[in-house]
Length: 255
Ligand SMILES: [Ca+2]
Ligand SMILES: [Ca+2]
Image (cartoon, rainbow, N blue to C red; front, top):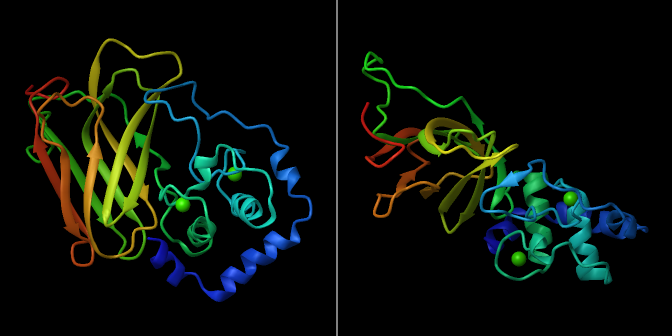
């Protein structure tokens, strides 16, 4: 990933980044902002930082590129937390992370590892026996994908199992070695209910170049022994498709 990003980043881009780094004379102001909490009150599988948000202001932008570069090149303050600056998740903080993040922000490169992606979803689904024959029955857990041929992979997760009272959902995505790992999570403003339900989720993953990928979805409520929702696809030749697994454990099942 590092080398691919290095190749993609033009000399011009690198000069721009260095110019920005060297132009900012009051870097400390970037750190004077109080770290902002995430926009949700409760998060299952709590994450306490946003990868790429090195200056902890709640956004990922060029200020974070400058923050990491300043730390590495000019002895500036340490990113908060340090792991937020390891945007390619190779367990090192170095110039490769500066290039990776700049490539993402300026050239549509892969997003920071375990990027947070907003998810659109409708209310808890109800199933009727008279549903059209082509609808997805409640004993199937499916991914439909649509690829724009260049950068964006659109995912529709049909019959995703979550708590009935989920108020918000997000997907955390990591792209590494042609494996796209997606962890879907739920959030609550008040609290969870004592029931689970099936939902349809929609979200877009950017920074996906054409190629062969294994797509893995990590689901919260699978029963032990359930088949993982995982498949391999060549996005160079197949720009849309669908993969389903049969499920029988709650909240999936027959109607
Ligand atoms: Ca930031
Ligand atoms: Ca790194």
